[in-house]
Amino acid sequence: MEKQENKFGFTSFAENWNGRLAMLGFVIGILTELLTGKGILSQLGLM
Figure 1 (cartoon, rainbow, N blue to C red):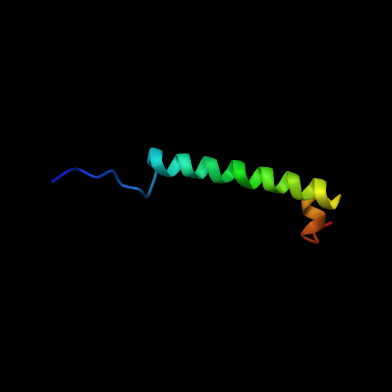
Figure 2 (tube, rainbow, N blue to C red):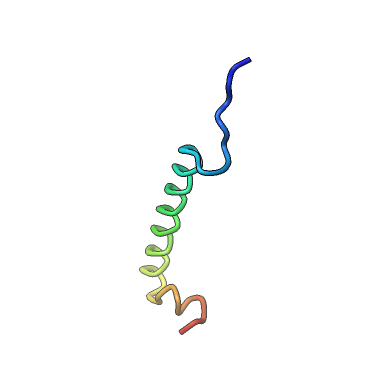
């Protein structure tokens, strides 16, 4: 039986996906800010 790498916890697989999703969220936040003309905090109603 082959040894399978865990996909949860502090593994390189999980960390790679965490980084990719963080970059995607950052880009989406910047694009939304450019399209609406309002900052992220303003969009959330915090300012």
